[in-house]
Amino acid sequence: MKILYISQEITPFLPESEMSTINRMLPQKIAELGHEIRVFMPRYGVINERRHQLHEVIRLSGMNLVINDGDHPLIIKVASIQQARMQVYFIDNEEFFKRKSVINDTKGKFMDDNDERALFFGKGCLETVKKLGWKPDIIHLSGFMTSLVPMLMKQIYADAPHFENAKVIYSVYDHGSNEKLSNELVAKLEYDDVDKKAVTCLETPTIDSMHEIAIQYCDGIIRGTKELPKNLEKMIDDSGLPVMDFVEEVLDSQKEYEKFYESISSDVMVS
Picture 1 (tube, rainbow, N blue to C red):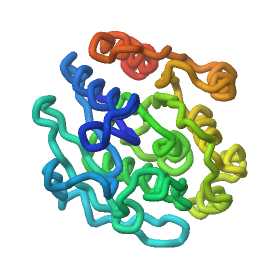
Picture 2 (cartoon, rainbow, N blue to C red):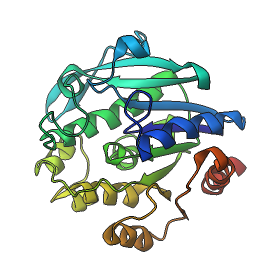
Picture 3 (cartoon, one colour):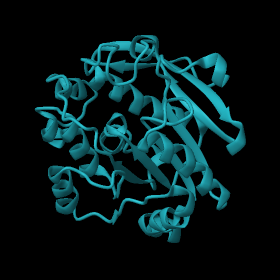
Picture 4 (tube, one colour):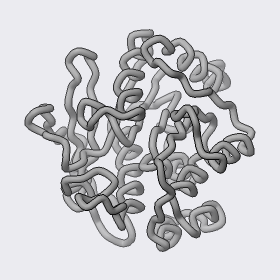
């Protein structure tokens, strides 16, 4: 299988966390099973480019993405995790990702433009995959910064041959708080010709409603956190989608992930 990993956090580029550790080890272990992978994350300003030897991929950069009626240059960088023989692609933009922070600013405040950052990141990943000429069978998403990708695929990229057979899996993590995003998110999506009726859960956008839009459009769910809040558990239960439970040790569970990927993509692989 060809598996695309899009994650909000990956170590060693960011400090170790439940999400960053899983998304560092899982792609490596899946690749060792013989599958073809690509890995994407945002190029946050806190990432030390010199230490991690990031460099721009000129042939993939140079495109402008329209976000809320504004043109924003898309810069693609790449770095290698040598011990894993794994490359990570970084979605970069001076306005959205230069600041020395991740999701909260240096004072700990949830950033006002996280909605636009998530939209730019999602569109940037999909556009870059198209430029790579690569057709994933599975797209595995982690973190609310990736949560718009399933909807974008169905609403904006529905005719893109690169994604016509791709199945989307969303790992749900407990963010720890239900922060509010810009009330203009739906209007910004409408500018991209997204049907307002298709994103009603984002009319009052929060972290939880970002999880909800991802679940609404994905094909399978993984519990990324052992104990999720009751409202997120209800979203998962109500979805009727295939669910993989939380796994304690990724190092010993790559076969479980592989089996789940295969079950989600079985109709694609047979055809």
